[in-house]
Image (cartoon, rainbow, N blue to C red; front, side, top):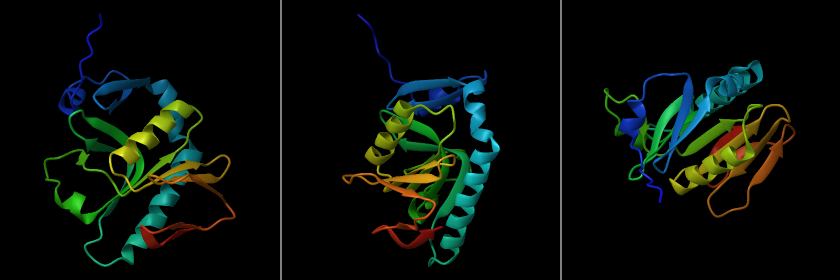
Length: 184
């Protein structure tokens, strides 16, 4: 008989730094060695994250206040509690309501972003990416973009709809969620 215990975000944060990257998915710890995650920080990945953040910030400047915030750099996010799901997201847009609930003492954003963007790296595995998409949508994220900088594609996921794939020749917009959002 095996005993399964769930971990909380607070327990996750208390683990000493030891060269592992960690996420918490429905209370289950997911670990990857830093050697496998270091490819995230290659020039294709960082340039893509930078470009997406710039375009989202430009879009955000044209929105009425309060409009929310764009965060990058594996932003620590508590998507849900009991059991906890805590992940790092490459680029995220959080609504003004989620941002207003944060205190000056919080280091992680608690609450689902409206948009989560994951930029693929050579070390990313299909099953890990699929698990994140499913978890993001289940936690209330409205749009999930999976960006492949090598093939220059974006796959867009929305709850209850089939994924859509776009390439560099397409114009991406926010659909029913963000009519004014367009990226090229």
